[in-house]
Length: 174
Length: 136
Image 1 (tube, rainbow over the protein chains, first blue to last red):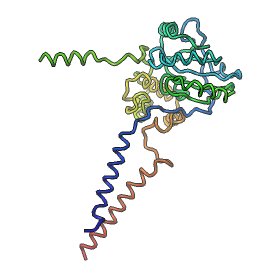
Image 2 (cartoon, rainbow over the protein chains, first blue to last red):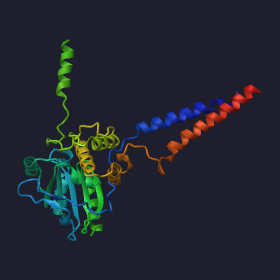
Image 3 (tube, rainbow over the protein chains, first blue to last red):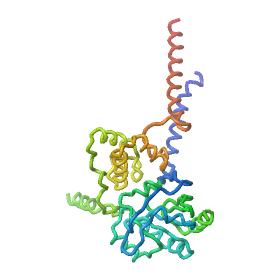
Image 4 (cartoon, one colour):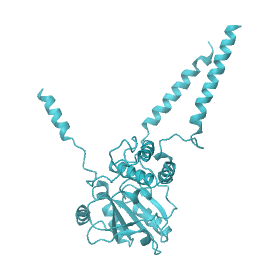
């Protein structure tokens, strides 16, 4: 019997092995934005809660790099990253928050409970800005340079180890 | 019986965590466009766009708030006269090919189309040679 008889079986076994291996690999649910290096799309959003300032594209063009934090009061990982945003604020970083699909009273309650690291907090009731900058969830944090160009995207909540990276990206955007 | 009742009770209590907003859906998340032709174009497009929150569903299929907001974007853009493929391109620019379900031949995906064609050719060649051998 020729060895070639076994070839299809080996091919099939190889395919099975490949499929089994791929199934055991963790799935990466993060979708990176394609807008890195692009200008911040035009927006002009009202404040998310009483006493806050809204945010517009023009606020990002004064020469100072900023963080743009996409978050929501209903988002649990956003609570986890609150202390890290506080540390970034203490390091002198201006942080603009955009609250996705959020109610003013919920935003106010969140800020009273977990601190307010924001210089501006705008409301995005239809996720319009979120979609326009290629963000696919909350929380996400973008580094915007002083000319309003998106330079860096951090997906998910900011952990302690991410703070130096964000500070370095802000420095690079200077 | 009582165990079954207990199981049912446990199931009914196992509600998902409230990690979702309580805002009303976007105006055009569930409302169809008035123009049937435009609505049909929007529907066709929405069925081939991936929901980013619930990644195995199209935005037409999903009740996630973000999918509703994406449907709203699709409908208002098409109502404003934008070409459906321009709307798709707008999303692909932001989220990559991943957001589109429509099969696309590209530098990365061409083997998916070429390999089956090649296999069919090989099978046909093997079949032809065997038939010829049997005939002789």
